[in-house]
Image (cartoon, rainbow, N blue to C red; front, side, top):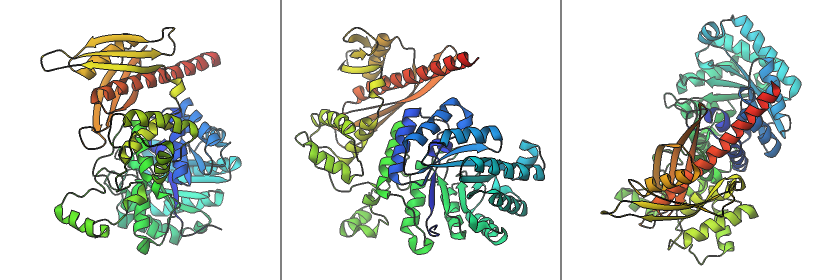
Length: 527
């Protein structure tokens, strides 16, 4: 029997979030992130739009095969080709779901679909029936619902439920509505759709007016029991409802909302950090829940209050989302058991292989820093969880930088190329700075013509021995095809972090180019 007070958390980071500019991921990165979403405790992962590309189909298929304990959904337009592709992609999921949609607003029906209301309603019903032949769990969305005629919207919701939809999602596709209006829309459906209790009513809100979270909570108060959201609020245009804000809003104000989720909130920060590491896009410092300043206090009055009782200025405990206020006293003499125990307290469970990689990174850092902080561990963790190590073409063996006020910067780089017979490849180059010289040396070794588009440096911890994290956007054009990736590098030395970041980007470019070549070969064989 369904728990009427539980909010189903439907995560669409890998579909709606990933399709927004700057947030693309390769298949391996999607798998890593999907497994983290399962640890977080989401109920449904919308893994992609299978028919849209071979890469999306493969990622949905692999997530369905490997990620357990969650429903895996594939998106499909209201046509047979899309629905059948989604069915094939999710068929091996533990709990497969097909999510199909068609517009319900007159502006979309007349100008985009160029059909009548009656024709669109027939297409919606036919799509649900088609999907129902493949899976028991079918979700339907009337796109642009908040700009639709309410009577027509109600008739569509009633028809798709009668056709077998188990979840009906009411999307604010363009972020147009406001909380009071959205509450009225959802309540109208509950009051006017016979049989509406046979399905879970969901909402999918965009943040164009900065109201996605508020609108979602208003819908919950009106009876909605599924929320579609993304980690860090990423998504089309201004983004989607931010999962961390919704979950902590429900938890913090359960006295009013009277509902709950199944999210393991201590995994919120690790999940947010992992997404940042994969995409190379940082969270703004003042972002609610997961921003760097979310639990920071600078005002003397606030500091005084927090020291006496944290509740004076904190409505949530940082520990609840995976942040520890206390200093983590770890150094180069710490053993595996102490580090593993600390990682567990931060919400991380590592396999032996991941722990081995993590420990090597940790020891390297501990030799350079007197003290290791929680933030250092969280920065290193995704490096150890990245399972593509054996597929990386280039590995940095050494970097030596020479610079000064009166002498031109010069950097020596030693690389190992997995495809070269030589033990190591060495190059020395000059540049406008140590990083520039290092990148020039790397290009000489690899023959790469990749271009550095953006470069972002963050000091993860305070002090002169702070661990530095560099993320950069790198592009390369091959035979008229442009490839774009985000590289990451972590090191106590800023220059070395920048060079490591560029090499990481080259490895990702090699991976992307390899996948592209395989896809082209498959197409040629098919032709």
